[in-house]
Image (tube, rainbow, N blue to C red; front, top):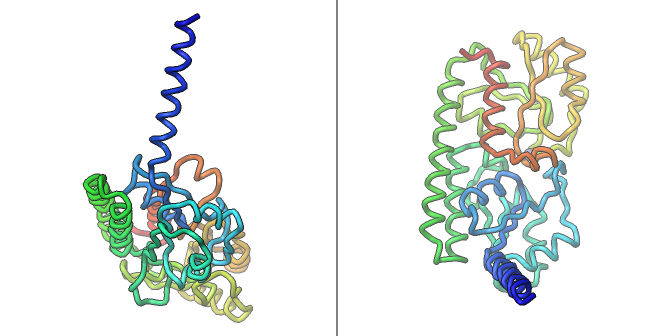
Length: 288
Ligand SMILES: [Zn+2]
């Protein structure tokens, strides 16, 4: 009986100490999936990361919920991309009653109007370093761990960039036509592709006009385009219309703003998504 009791006491003690250890981890909240994955890679087991955007939700039109207010009130670090990408973020943060909260605008100072900064992998590396710095500021005892992890992750991003450069330098077609909003400007510029998006804006709220679509059909026919690309998590209605009209085939090109519940549960990574994109680009643009 005593043995049993002491075992139970030990078990309770063990569970409690684990809970205390878990409480000590800093809680980091990120808005979009790339920031979530960068933070996860830099912070590893020393932080607990929350992706604010519910899985599958479109990022540009997102409006934070009352539950988001509660979560950020209790968090240590809040990371968003920029005022262009999350126009709601600054006002949201002003309304949060949390004096210890560290806020990071990960793309601040990148002067281009295009908010999809993570799709230029050299900019993504700067964002990773900024995340490293805020994690270390909140938790200086683990500074060396954050530095080593950031260095290692940035090495992977640099390899990805090299892989893109190698693969996309030998393509027969150089025109990337995409049926969604203008998300791949940085990527196209860096790898010397001509980029045409059906939506003229940087967000999916302004749908293409019939005139835009007619022009796109002409471009597809003139350039004898065989594949066009559709974006993630949005119904590929525009892509399907173009396919019916011109016979082009469709491939996914994900800007990785967010992922589906299934992808999140499977542990998909930003680099996984970018590698899948590269495979589709190689096929769609006839690269060697
Ligand atoms: Zn976007």
